[in-house]
Length: 54
Image 1 (tube, rainbow, N blue to C red):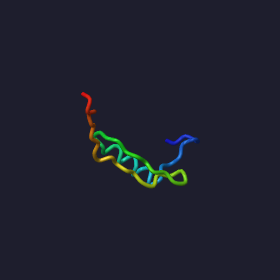
Image 2: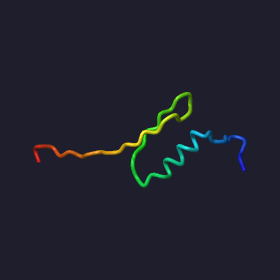
Image 3: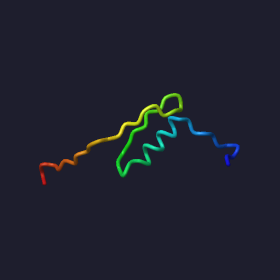
């Protein structure tokens, strides 16, 4: 049951939630335009570098 202050999710918002739930772990960037998510960017690779002085 929806309260008076709640709103139905748009198709894009539903897709966003599904994409987030499908991640085992990681990081995503959500691009928003006109108050709506329009694109998700998933970071594929991150490499930690060690400094030369160690």
